Length: 264
Image 1 (cartoon, rainbow, N blue to C red):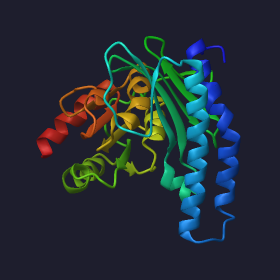
Image 2: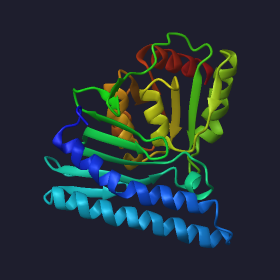
Image 3: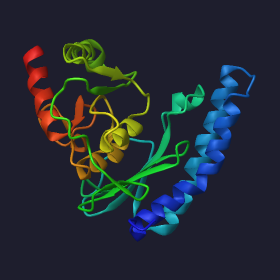
Image 4: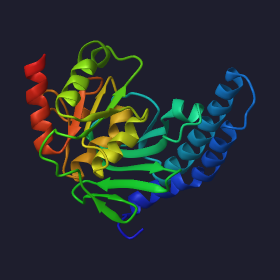
């Protein structure tokens, strides 16, 4: 693709290599008349195949770089890292729901400098590099220009381990949506929610208890699309893992934080 650098091409080619088998395996989920434990085993095998392929290709392309796959981590200064999520939206995949994706990001000095989110079922590849904008396939994308919370789409990612969003903020967010005739949606894939915020399909995003591995793909993509993804103290979400985070365009982001502070 014309907008991709050599680095992004490495990332894209590594993901495309596993896409056909991933889509094939997803098609098998609906046909499997077996126990839930067998389906879990099937999905685990799918994820292991993705893991092995990406580990091989990325390590081969940049052997001196670190690589973190499906794990939270700390990083060394002045070292590059591949940050990989092999199946974001795993439980959707497990149940035959068509909302899952694969992601690769590059970190340097605790900052994401390149990222890709591949949605295999919709054939959409979202990508960004620091200072070069955000794209889906070959089309430049930007967050919505909406200036009011009225009639917005709020995306909520509610991690099963989360405490804050379940006990404190979830009802607050729903009340905020209701007060402004807006709607809430839970897609079950944080990465797809990041991508859809970046391209303007949704207006606001709320998530909690995401580790660095899961935030990496959204942090740069949303920023390069003109949006914010931060915690409640305006700290970049990637530098504030496992906290309640908010994503939106600058105007809505400011308005949301103001209203949440007034409601709590």
